[in-house]
Length: 429
Image (cartoon, rainbow, N blue to C red; front, side, top):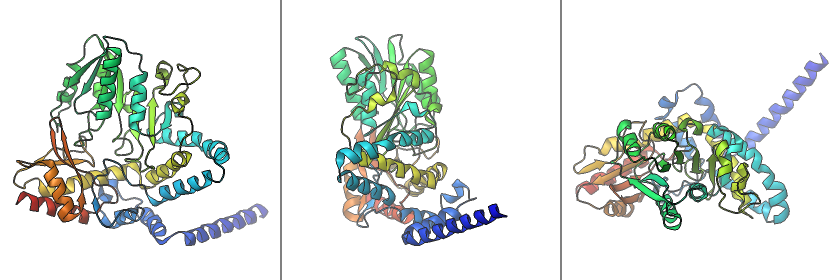
């Protein structure tokens, strides 16, 4: 009986605490809590088109009412909770930097590493925290022990920073780059895999694969390419700048040896935050970007030897992970895919329109690309901003020519209706 009384008393305290806490929350946060609860039991695919639910998600962001931001593929805004955490940690750091940064905030790195690893589906000892995917990938590109004559296979549609990094190694170390040219969009795995396999030789040491092509949102069959590479003893580097926290997968499922992501894209972490995955057995053979006592030790932390860093940014990543977990990865993926298809379906039959992105969820998610026959991407880009205050981005890269449109979880179908109105008007000029 005394145990029961103690339990009831404790439960009453918790209830009162929860009640008072809810009163302290701003209205948008209370409404979001309610919306999340109401969504329990609703399938992700059904929830994707429920505008009322996503309205409450939108209230978590502080996006400008002056423009419709459809260039989230470059860098995404962070929700309020992430912004507030970063500002709070920054203020704390400035009270006594060497104490609060090194002795307080830095102690949060290991719990953060574990949380990232859980989301990535891998061992925490395979995750390094850095500033962006370029830093992570270039750590690997420049850290690989390649020699003159070794070949690396990559695509002309890969990201420029990575292309330039390999070209620098080619110039400096005498490796040989073998470039493939992908015709996209494609829903043919065999075609894509064949382009890579046909480029492999007995001198190929590395293949670089972009998980989702940033120019048009094409998702590549990484696992199938990696399988063929590993059959031939070829190491696999995967650019996951746009894929991590965008659609559902676990890094080990890709069979990649190395993988890097920018967390300020689809995880909605602070600008200037990233993550590097290195398969545990590969860590010891990669030189870090910045020198450490033993560059070939098998400790993932050697890739974090940056010196003094913005701890307030790093620790706010945790709030982004919480926000991602709150929405749910599957819900997020289905909504993003729904939004991409929503606007593309409405413009696909307009005269002179060419869509450079697949409708199929296996080959595309949030990012879409549209071209207008006889017109330059910059013309449509400028028209949308000048006349409709829609911010997208013109793309001209290799054989991909069009305007990239990238909605996000805070984007409404009303926003996309304005986009469609603008595209329709442009095709009539």
